[in-house]
Length: 442
Image (cartoon, rainbow, N blue to C red; front, side, top):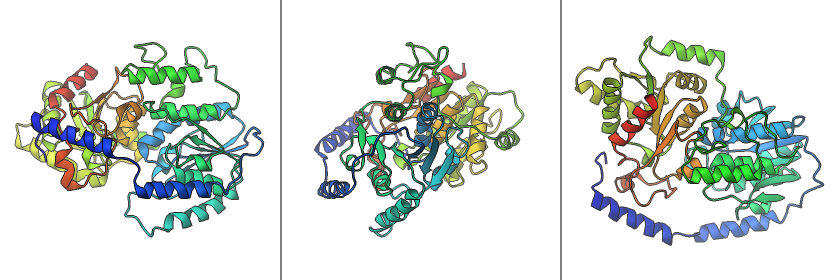
């Protein structure tokens, strides 16, 4: 599974995957579920009078990267409704991502079904949880709920069952029965732009006239950003402009304790620090062990970099084999460091802030590096990079893919035995990654 797929086999497999995707459609189970959701949706009434909301609930069940993508929309909501109480509802796994966000007044947690990354429990458990959570939210008397994940019918149903009178989300068949207002989810738009569009649709004081050179958020601006991202251009105000404006960047603020913890982990060196994060939430998004080793060696020897490997404690199984390969070759000017399992989320952010470059597959930590202003190289494959790629200037944040013709399929749950046939990330060349790293370090 570590070997690069031969070109002829790559083309044949990609064609098979394309044909399979073309044949795939809504399953009988999905069709039955859709009918049931529409039937349940009829139980809930339409919106009450659309008075300015005093209490707003933001529902986003996802993990690190998607929660960071929501932060510009939170900032827009705060500017639009400066007097409102704005609460976020996230999974326990996402609490640390938004705990210090100044655009939120309150952070609530819910163990959203389907997002726990645990084996599925009793089939009725999600609906029992929905009833329990609906009663809790009903007591908090929210006026407006925004469902920021495009397909999250469970979250939309929760808002309806909690009696929240204004419920705003995307016009997706499974979600719409529980909404009082829906806007289009535009294919090809970046997720940050989708969330900003939803926040803009919530109303408030109208389109924001941003000070100075900061671009204002209007429907026209959203369309312009989407077009430039689709064309591979930096999504600033002008083609080639690096400045997003601090308002619309991803927001994460490490604490003073986080900064101190990061400083204590790093060596005293004048060499550029390059972070490599080899882990990701799905095995199909990972690169080759030998490729990471070759890249790390060349960064150290050719660019004079101090290489740092980052990851959770469980990701040492990805990092240790890379270190073992590096140990078999000639000694490096400075040995690479593994910091896996040694950082909190905040300390990891503070660490990335001190790095000259961060490299890794499509993952939440790479988006955290983007939020810290660190140049990044992202390895993409199955996931649509126009929608979920790095949110920043294309001159500072690069998303690379291989030449597999079935990119993107947006499927991540391939069984282990099938990964050998899905080399879209695995087959990215070391030279391809190194070339972009050299540009960004230069």
